[in-house]
Image 1 (cartoon, rainbow, N blue to C red):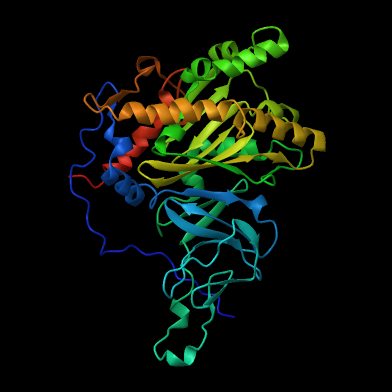
Image 2 (image 1 turned 60 degrees about the horizontal axis):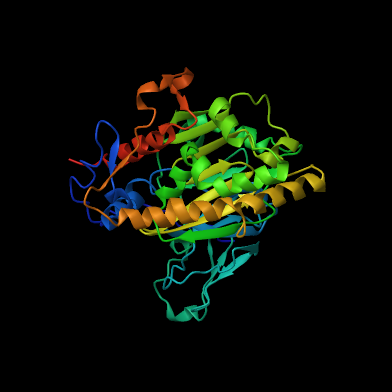
Length: 411
């Protein structure tokens, strides 16, 4: 069996970016230029300097429980197949692109298959990537089958069941990359009696705006009392008393810069993560740079499509070994706040994405402010920096890493 898949190599023919594109976008008092959300050139550089060099979340092992299982998703803007080998059970990430004429070879979002067949000319590949068959191949006299398998990303690793991949052949391991964020993936993975599973699939949201807006909003405690006021009013009507959500956020939560672009919001009074506690959400939100968030009882995968187009996939976290009633309650809670008819996502879509995009069309004074809590940050252990729940510390955590990577080749 030919099990060889090509690997991604640096393309030396890529045009070098012009110098100085990123310089001047940040001020010392943490004003950030609005072009980071609207410039096609900056978006292109993000794909080169961030999404080709960072570990990217692409799925969870529970989505590929058996040999031959697969899912399709994206690594940055590039379509990929995350597949578990039929023969060896190894998880690989393959570019979803036929090596003949470039058509996609896998079209369903998930399934089980031993082979992927291109619909254009019938070239067939093993689900581990190797080229299996070429129709009417007698006309090819120079066909190097060993080099024409589906292109595999050079490194794919899992941590606590979360699958990550990377275009770079060398560099930090996944554990090194996760750093201070790793313990929070461990906690999420241990939320259920036997772990977690993304068996409820996902629903998707899309908006005409930049991908970074979703990551900003995920860790923004400052907006909750304003954007979600109608939801808080519903909770108040149900209970006959104002809900403790905002007072608890103000009194008990804090934010943290975990390093490497990763950030955290956590309830300092929570002693442990339990299955029943997950119904109301984990006692923390964590963002793994650049495009993964775990928030409440949900895995959130942010997919940049264009400088002004983003897709977000929301996966409720089901608990293995928990009562059906517990998992049903997690789903109902997810639907109420994040579902298509829910309060939370629709609020955020309207205010954080649509109206933010509308406002950013006014470019005369094209700066945004991210300095809340800048002068009250407090250092902790392992290089972690802490702030208040409503501080913009997570935003600064994200953009410190964003800026470092984007400026790495500037001269």
